[in-house]
Length: 314
Image (cartoon, rainbow, N blue to C red):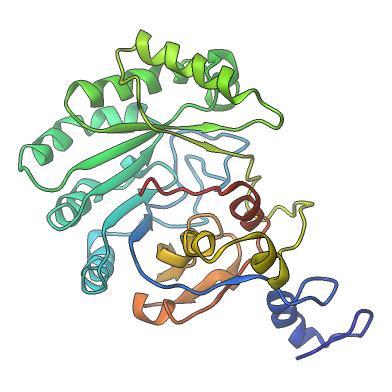
């Protein structure tokens, strides 16, 4: 469907056109999936915190994405294992509010390592005994990434609530003391002095007796769900002119997928950052989803293109 600039597009075709073409009519950049190395599960947008900057819009009462049960997750774990998956990862919301999260981790870690993204506060601490019992089984490791938005306590607590900076560090310290691998997610400010910011985090690592070489994953502001950001559109020319084949193969949508629960249906989405756009609903099975080309339409795709942003630690 070739449509010139200024041509009127029938409403029924507009969505397809926007998926395939930029506003100037250029073919959008895209990624062809090549493998399933990492499978993500969204545990729902319910969270004990209500951060105004949350890319998922999570809060204690949010139901945009629902919490899946073990019986709903298990078939996707089983299917992924037939496709060579190397890791299972879990995000939210706050995963430790999910009733079946430990049961899910118990099953998944029989086969592959697992990573859980958490805010590190009360919901995690309340599950520590269950996590230690799981750890004692000697299955594949379960690791944790805790969100510490800023090395400045006041800045972190301004977004997440008073006292949550210390709670998150104490949660991370508790995990480390019990032998769990921990990493940290932080915000990346525009124009920041990255070396200075990282040095401030390392001072905190020493204070809380955390590993000096702990992995830090930095993210730009992804904005709230449904936001429209003023970023350049990615064309097929952009992808071939500015990126190598290896770079394209490293995009999350090239080697991972995310499972969400929307209404009563479990759905496969292209990656962890685009569940607010139904154009990225690919299929209801992993095998079918791997046949879909991923067009880089979402404004968060630009962070992957320009900054190499990735939720993965693989």
